[in-house]
Image (cartoon, rainbow, N blue to C red; front, side, top):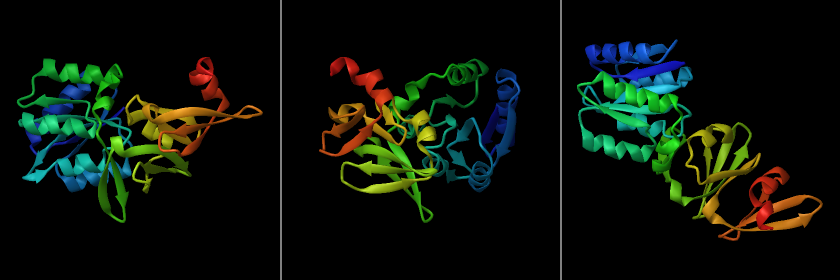
Amino acid sequence: MKVLIVEDVTLVADRISDLAKKHLSDCKVKISHTLEDAHYSISEEVYDLLFLDLNLNGKNGFKLLQSVTASSFQTIIITANREKASIAFDYGVLDFINKPIVEKRFKIAVDRFLNGNGAYREKLKYLTIKSKGVISLIKIEDIEFLKASGNYSEIHTIQKRCFLHDKNLEKLTKILPDNFLRIHRSYIVIKTKIHKVIKHGGGKYSLELTSGETVPLSRAMFKEFFLNDY
């Protein structure tokens, strides 16, 4: 397991590192003291868990948080500002720990990570899109469906816009709320935006969405989720 700690105060970073090594067996810890180094670390390595301070030498840790909204690792915020921490839940963070860090509270957050509690995903309100070096945020509620595009994903919105995401469907599935359903190896839809199932014969199916858009539905997913209704 690989852990990245983004904290500008050395003593606090070392405290988080010691607690992480104590409560996460066999974890490898990397410490970044600046946003620039954190961005570089994330681009060069795959992490499982991020501990992030939202105030780094006067710089806003939200910039990093926004840029990694749709990363497959989970994030725990370390901060003295509870108001900022509550806003951070909109970006899909798992938990936040107040400063000064109390070990008992730290362990609760780590246990939540280890137990795979997916409740944090339901609070996710945005996905990050990176295009030509510019970061944009797409509201989860505006997404109509997602389509595989090689190693990337197309994000199709209810406004009939399409964005290319740098994560594949497999990675996005891990961080999207539970109301997103992978109905085909190349498609993910939101359950509430399914209007009806269309049978084409010969074991072929598709879904009509509330917008009128149609997307393919695999035979296996039809049997698992829709067979009893049709």
